[in-house]
Amino acid sequence: MFQSMRFLFRSAVLAAIAAITASPASAQVFLYEPTLPSGPIEPNDPIVGIALPGATPAEFRAHLLWNLRSGLNVAALSCQFSPFLRTVDNYNAVIDHHSAELANAYRTLEGYFRRVNGRTGMTQLDNYSTSTAQAFATIQAQFGFCQTAARIGKEALARRQGELHLVASARMRELRASLEPIQEPYTFLRIPVQLTPINLADCSRLSGRERRDCSRALRGD
Image 1 (tube, rainbow, N blue to C red):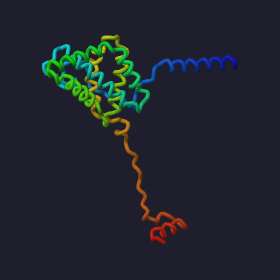
Image 2: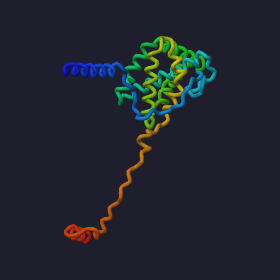
Image 3: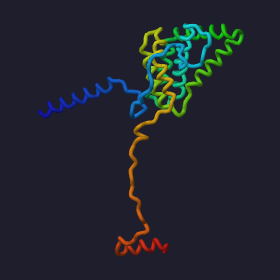
Image 4: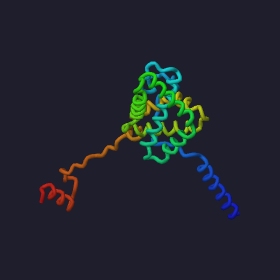
């Protein structure tokens, strides 16, 4: 009887461990999940990034895709404080998995800047890439940005090749919104503990030696 109970208990423990290890850990840096504006956007939506006057639909799509890549790149560089987010590994995997689509986006943007700016087109493209990356740099909103970018990176990996632009369209609004500072409710909404102040000037409620010591302390003896 005792042996069979030990066997059942051991089996239950092993089953519990298997269930825990089988489910992936959540990339969570907040105690409470923040709510961010979300919803799909068009590639020419101003929320995407730097304005591209006169861009074609294909160029706007490349613009949207390149902004997503830039955001994930900044996350890979600035979110390494949490290894659970895996922003570096996921970014490298996204670049490899969607390399053809990203290369086509870069060529399309190169064509836009050469067409609009002539001989200075490549210089303007470099400036565009730098400014696009800088727009995702944040300190005050780092936690929210890092958590959001990490989840977008994981979704991008789950997409088939050639579908990264769909992730960009669906998640760019959320990624931009994550650049606004988010307060952690548990930290900022807790009720402070009220302590009753101690009145050191009142020795009358004491007696004996404690009262004499209190009086001497007040007199500075």
